[in-house]
Length: 183
Image (cartoon, rainbow, N blue to C red; front, side, top):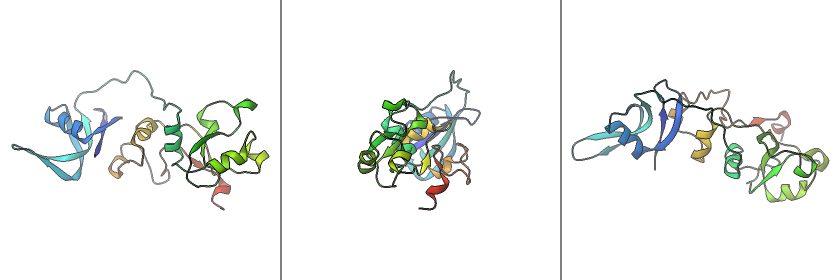
């Protein structure tokens, strides 16, 4: 099912909802349509374009700055479901500095890894195992919590509202390392 990005009255991204919920907000005059898909939903009395981006008419105060929780789903979304050592399909998470060696369970120390690379690295650092990280792990950006919930890349019409530029094609916060391009 299609999803819609919900913007605050100030055009700040708030959440992602189903297109059906977005239509309800439009019909109840709680939001206005900013961008839509090419499809339309029809009822007996009206036809409504399927919303892609809606803006709430009233400002909603957000009392805290959201931080993306560190879990498997979020790590795989950040790393594109690819092993950060070899680029194959990832099925495990790996601590760059093993927890047994004082490594913390934080965004900057956790990457997605395939079973083969995770076993090969074992209880060692990548340098000790003779392995290189393809990207430098870091916490997702400000609107990363919205993107993790999607499970995939955002709709192109959302890029302007999520402040995704052409120089920064990865909104999740993955920074390629210089040696990764040489592979």
